[in-house]
Length: 112
Length: 116
Image (cartoon, rainbow over all chains, first blue to last red):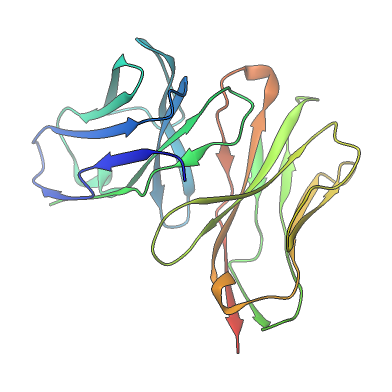
């Protein structure tokens, strides 16, 4: 299995608080992605990274920011969490852009 | 705009029988890739199979095969000899190669239940 660790695995927080989710990989893969999964929507891309300090937006990036200061870590931050950001968040990695992506186990985030 | 459509929200299949999960896609990019992922009730996303738009033959991986019909823009997943462990949600996804980003667009998923 691909070495991908997401933390925390579960989190409950309140509206308006900042939240940071971490994705850590041990595969030395260049590409990393953050998706959110909601009922009826499948998975939707939030942000992705194609190298250290190289990131770009996905289709649902509003309200989220990311950072990648090291190859192995990709952080997703909700600056001021809202209830609409309650979701399951998945990190994925791939060595090149045309290889299959492998996913972490997900983070279940509830914002009350 | 690229789009993936899975029209079957839920399906049942008898154990040991074959089942086909439908996926249609829309893209203007001549170069793209199609993927299937499995999500069991435990929640992880498991990569199953990949088909490139220029691949001449349909992809196969063990009991999984991808019925790729380019002219009809369909990429159906066929699971042969279903097992109880195949009960899960299945997602079809597409990537446009020309974007050089690897971004995946997912369908809404199909829930498969295998009956003993």
